[in-house]
Image 1: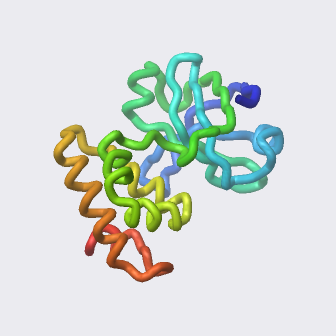
Image 2: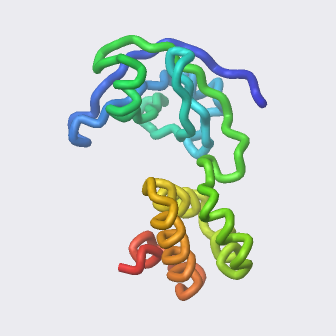
Image 3: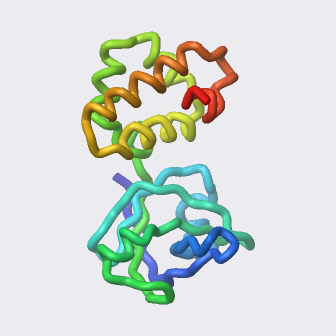
Amino acid sequence: MSSPTTFTTRIHSLDYLLGMTYLEIPPDVVQQLGGSFSMRLICTVNNALDWQCGLVALGQGAAYISISAKRMKALRVRLGDEVLVSLVKDESEYGVPVPEELQELFGQDPEGFQRFKQLAPGKQRYIINYVATVKNSQLRVDRAIQLIENLKRLPAGRESFRAILGK
């Protein structure tokens, strides 16, 4: 694992995105991380909570990482608070944890797994996150099957998010 890049920043709000809250990543930190906005990272805030994320360009070399209200509550922080941030490159295969139900389906459906592996990383994460967002295991199984079956029916290169969802 690479060594972490640690710095302090404040929690800001992007009003034009309905008040979405974010951690600003200064340009010098973006450069320390390699200057790319396409990498996956593990973000740790106040040495207490970590999650997998990516950088989004903010302008003038700066970037941001969104922070949800749920994470802010868990950290007991608010808009404007200063926080300690530690970023390290995410070495995991997909940049997000793969639900057990989806992993099991991949083992049982080699064709579906091959189609999944051909997708762009963002679409792979979309499928993983869409399956993972439900708490009920049976619903995760149902979602995984639906998405992979839809994916197998689509021509390669035509895998829009809507089409994968079957809409």
